Image (cartoon, rainbow, N blue to C red; front, side, top):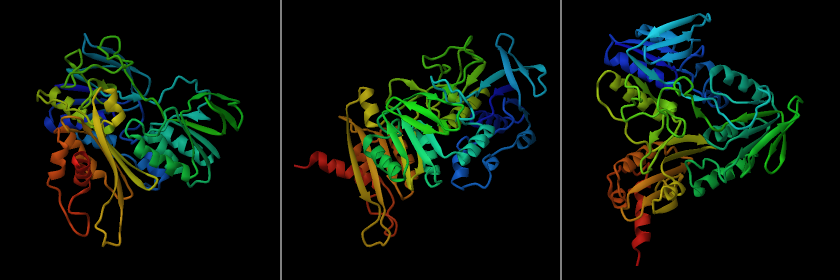
Amino acid sequence: MKVVIIGASHGGLQAALTLKKLDPQTEVVLIEKRSELSFVSSGIILRMNQMVDELDNVRYLTAEELSKKGIVVLLNTMVTTIQPEKSTIIYEDDAKKTCKVSYDKLILATGSNQFSTNLTLPSKDKVTVFKSYSSSVEVLRKLEQARSISIIGGGYIGVELCDALKEKGKEIHLIESAGSVLFRYLDKELSSLIEQKIVDSGVKLHLNESVIGFSDIEEESFITQTTNEEIRNDYVIVAVNARPDTTLVKEFLDLNANGTIRVNEHMQTSDPNIFALGDVISYPVRNSYRKSFIPLVNNVVRSATVAAMNVLGHPMKYNMTQKTTATKIFNNYIATTGLTEVEAKFEGIEVESIFLTLPSQLPYLKLQEEVHIKLVFEKGTHNLIGGQLMSEKDITQSINTLSLAIDKETTLEELVTMDFYFNPGINQPMGIISRAAYEFLIEKYRV
């Protein structure tokens, strides 16, 4: 069997490797329009935080390594046309020569476009986005030179950039159109804690503000115009609204209303010989009535595994996503899973919740670390549907426990009595999750 994969980011690579592991005789052709592969788009954050010495090191595979595994890799190769009726792809190679390749099965891993906005971005030298290695190199250089920087978008990328820049001696503005940062993942109790740390670090936070344009863009210093004020900048990063890249297939494949490619639970599109995965599809969200565009790498690699399995005839279904995330910003670990309280109400789910700040260790220990925790339960069933954690202690693995609990429809009462470990030098006899559920149970039934 010959399988062609368009796109060599996380999803395309995972699919290619899985195909070869399942059946080394499968012919796999991996086509990538850029000159590099396996670059992690958040590498710029790792480099700014000195977690790696060189930006180019933020990779986990090379084309040479893939070739040794028997995968044909075509870099600097732009697919121009897909002919599904002929099972043929037309592309331009790195010498701009037009070529054809046939396939038995096609996997679309075209991902999302770099961040898009309704704004006209007048100058890439002054107002820019980043995702690829080459664009990240340029952005890193510009950030080092700039004195006043605006970051548009208070999601993970925007907040992580603020954290990385906070001690660089620059004037930083974070502009978010919503009323809180990380609003897709956190309720106000935790987002307000992060917002305070952002402000305390010296970053100027602009909530409930939208950027409406730029002026004097050719000048060294120009104006970023928001709905509330004018901010003088010499560099702006746009970190909002990644969108699925369906340019090649929108004329012949079924799409969802949000522009993603429609797939079944096996990642198969409306053409049975074409599969799609990653940021180009929507995902079923646990406790939601709809599929959503959720550009998270953990979703990408899972969908790629499912696609590869089914391409080779091994039935496998994609499970729900809880959109589980984790990061470290402003010296705190943040981890989230499931629906926020606001999202749950939007979905029409009656919920009850608890927010607590709990000590992690027993009081006799010198080291004392607090954990902020919010749990969201469905009213009536008491099923856990959302969890949020924040601490200077690394609590990120606990979010995987909460994600599994949501997936298995674990109740409040079960969380209280669940079997978690205890060590007197590490934690308390009742762990953070059980203690939060316990306190909520007491609150509910106290006479």
